[in-house]
Length: 289
Image 1: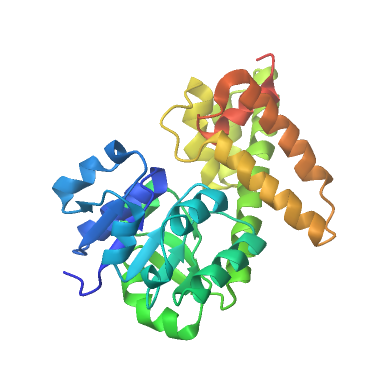
Image 2: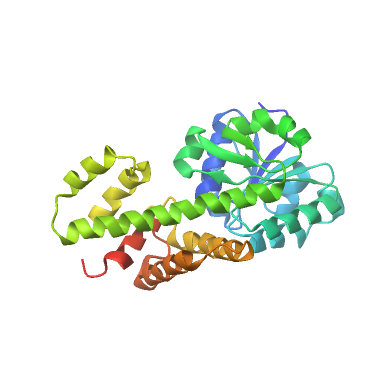
């Protein structure tokens, strides 16, 4: 068992899978989730379920924050926790947030005597469970070396230094997720509308430099119109796109393509796919199929 007292706050899709991986790799773990029932099944795996954020932080010396956005993270961390709760502890912020939100969180935690690491990941529940996430470590070299072995249980760790850079890297990569699914959905809609054999299309695509493994991962969902059991919901995709839009505008990067993507995603949400897999944006693009 690990000598560190590890805690994880937020057992949603990603957080739950990270918790499973930590337990599988023989780490003791405290967990907290606002809806406790979503963390109960971690108890038989060896986790201890805490009743409050204060209890969770007070007992641990390293805390994984896997929450939906910066507002939720700030509310949970700071509303009921005083200065002493943070002193000497390391906080890994794993949700997708803006660089400015990351800097604000870092400042507040550091003012209270804690260490802050921006630690977004590329990958979802399957990669978390198998320990193949790509982790972007935005923090000091001292913290990087201190926690490298622990984090390596989750996947490959890339050192970015400045926490802001880790946040921007995550947004830049998530923009590719958005762009690629919309490009594939548009292309595949053309194939279906012209009644071209989908397998012929995929066979050619797989042998080309245009191919992306995500296309095959999402193909069964699109063909079967089954977007349930989401790895990444359309609602969260829209949240990340909104962050990307703000960042590109701040950096004076042309944002018109992202605005068009936003319109398509909102159309799919209006069709009722908010909590479905993000590949459901296909339904807005294909429209009358």
